[in-house]
Structure formats: C-alpha cells, structure tokens
Image (cartoon, rainbow, N blue to C red):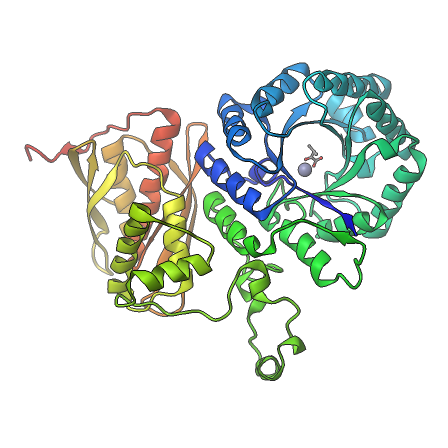
Length: 516
Ligand code: KIV
Ligand code: ZN
C-alpha cells in the first residue's frame, strides 16, 4: 500500500476563516491534538504576518514532536527568514513558500512578467534551502494556470531543491476529472518530478474539495492538504476527516492507499477545533456532524435495529465518538465522571479533575441529568478559558413585557470589586452595557449564537459571540442553564481576551464597591 501524507493546515489556512483567530495557547492545544491524531505535517502558521504569530509557531515547533512543522512564506527573503526563525527548533522543520502561477494572479496581483516570477520562485527555494533541506513550493491558483508554464516552474523549482510540489486549487474551481488530468499531466511531463512529493490543496467553493483531493490521490498525489472540519478561507478547504475516512471506509475502491491517521482521535480533534475557533460544526456535516450517526425516519430506525449496515456505513466508534451514552447525575461520583471523560478521550488528573468535577456537580444540581454533550461543553469552557482579569461576582437582570430591561453587574478585578447598573434593549444588552461601564471598553458585538447543548427545558445553553475592538476580533464563549448568565460569561470571556491581547487596563466608570 502506498502512504498518503496528511498535511494539516487548520492552524494556517483554517485560521484564515473569518473570526477564527487563535491565540498562542489555543494554537498549541490544537497542535498537540493534531500530533495525537498523527498527521504527517502541521502547517503551524504564517510567521511574517505578526510577531505574535511567529511566537505561536515557534512554541509549536519547540514543543510538538512527531509531525513535520511547516511555516508559510511568500517568495520574499523577509518571509523566509521569519518562517525559519519560527520553525528552526522543530524536530523536522519545513519552509513552505508559494507564488501565483495563473495569468490572473501574475497580471493583476503580482504585476510581473511570468519569467521574472519563475525566477523569483527559484531564488526563494534556493534561499530557503540554505536553512533546511525540507522545502515545499506551491503554485498558487494552479488550476487556472497555463499547463506549459506550470510544468516549467515545477521543473525549475525542483532543480533548485524543492522536495514537495503543491498544486493548489486556490479558488475551488476544479472538477474531479479535469483535476485528475492536470495531476497526471504534471507527473508525465515534468522530467524531474520523481525527486519531489506531489501534493494537492483544494478549496471548497463548489463543494468539490474532497472529491478533487481523492481524485488526485488516485492519479499519484501523495500528500493531501486539508483542515479539520473543513474550515478555511471562504468556503473552506477539504475536510481532513472526510478524506481519511473515505480512504478507509472505501478501501475496496482506494485499495492502494493508506494514511497513518489515528482515527479514534478524529471526534475529539474536531470538537476541540470547533470550540477554540468558535466555528460550529453543521449538524449534517459528513463524518463528524451530530446527525451523521442519527437515524430519524421510522423505516431507517427499524432497519438499523435489525441490522446496522442497512443504513450505516461508518461506525461512530471508529472516529472516537460513541453512540451509547451514560447519563450522569450528581450522585454518579468521581469514578463515573472520570470514566466518561476518558471515553471521550480527555484525561484529567489531580486538581484539574477536581476543578472539573466541581463544575460538573454545579451543573448536575441545576439540570439533574448530565449528558456527554454537557461534559463536552464544560470541557470546551475549560479550553476556552483565559486567566480572567474581570470575574463575574453578581448578576441581576430585569425584563418583562412592561418593564425597562435593566441589569446590575458586579465584577472582581485583582481583589477589587466594581459595580455598575444600566438598561438596554433587552436584559443581555443591559448587562453588556453595565460591563462596558466597568471595563471602559465598548467592543462591537459582531455575532451572537445561542444553542441548547442537549434537548429539554433544563438544557445547558451555550453562547458564542464575536467581538471587535479597535483592530482586534476575538471569540467569547460561555455556558449556563441560565442563558442570560451564559451570555454574560461569553462577553466577559471575550473582554478578558481583549484585555490580554491589547495590554489594555480595562478600568472604566464602574464604581468601586468599597465605599458604596
Ligand atoms: O489556497 C492556496 O493557494 C494556498 C497556498 C498558500 C498554498 O493556501
Ligand atoms: Zn488555501
């Protein structure tokens, strides 16, 4: 069987999803999980884009062992220097440089002659080779490029030392048959192609990213670039989980290829990426959506009860999900909670577990029956946790048909207590206004999402919001059985991140409670 390398770009192209910005700690958490998933290459970021990004990639390179750690760079020395600075401590560092090859990109974006650009690509590869032997070259917008020109570029950059050649369908324009032809032609026409691994990177603008990637594998591509949950620029990139599960489930058809993916880590990785980026997984998403293993119609349920294979081709346990769940209550005890967490792939010990257990008890007191989805939401809270500057101490809101929505909020900051009251369009707006009075910040609420984590009236509500302040956009997340409290927790989670990110002090007009 031939190995297909899985190149994960969740932390680079995936992070280009609007609103999905991750901080260093969040990127590290995802990178550690990608290593457990056993991807071959982690593209950790685009280091020249900001000093924070460089530091985040550097932290991943220093800590995460196993996969190759790659960093993206344009064909500019400054970018390549930054990429190397970021990955140089990795066990196996890679510099990934790219340049447009389509007429549209060359004429309108790059505004340079094709021969000048070919030479820039060659020089960039040579420059990157001074740092590392592992250099990847991507021909941006390859699927709208002239094939003859592309073949000349590929031959030249391989001669300059590129060890992986990536063919991106940058705008998701390709269709499988045509993409297969392109890959076959490159393999037949470029004389030194055997000196490099051929890779593909497909975007999903026409919903064909996974189909195009699989078609390319069948024609000889041996590296596939893809992202967890299919997140990425615009409509996203090919979904990692869909590609690897298709290769496995249809091994009768894809009989020559294998990946080294640790399938049981898929579910957990998918949930982690969703909770840290704040991008929900559509319920009907192939492989990982919550409906992917649910049977609704009576005919289907009847069939599955008689014989699973009638309507089920993927077993939830394959990807680390579990169909049958235990229902926990406040009396379940530590052992049962720990066991359920382990089944979900989380290992918490000592104080960490005890803290989690206390939040479980709090929830179990409120809603009596705790499901796996609730534990997931509590875990996501922990993962989204940012050491808070402002801590919610007291919240009271008033709302109703004839009353003016108002809120009293009390927050603690470094041992001091601040209190503010305000009114608003509704109780959540009122509480947010009161918080703004205390912090002195007034971030713009770009997006607000509320979802019931489980069924039923006592369900935990999960609020995810997107806030913009000055040039920063961040996500906040909070859960509670009280949706106003969940909304306030999400807002404070976001505000605390902004305070940390911007080095803001966050001291507004809220009155100090001492002296009130
Ligand atoms: O879509 C694209 O072309 C890219 C390249 C940088 C590989 O993301
Ligand atoms: Zn891309």
